[in-house]
Length: 66
Image (cartoon, rainbow, N blue to C red):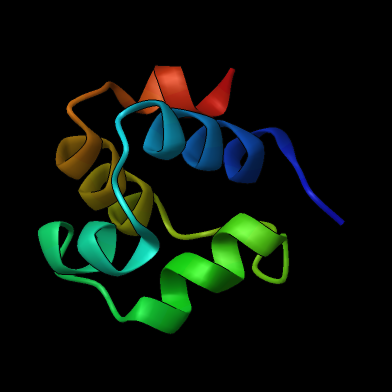
């Protein structure tokens, strides 16, 4: 089941036209980590992980949590 973090990551990533693969490299995270978070398979990612994704997308953690 998707949550707001997963929806917001996907929405912002797609708006910026960044692939999941590119985001995983920019955030220095495994590709499957990104796919699991976006699909909702990892409903509560670690704060450190969310921070890396936010930095890679050029947004704040708050933008991803809304």
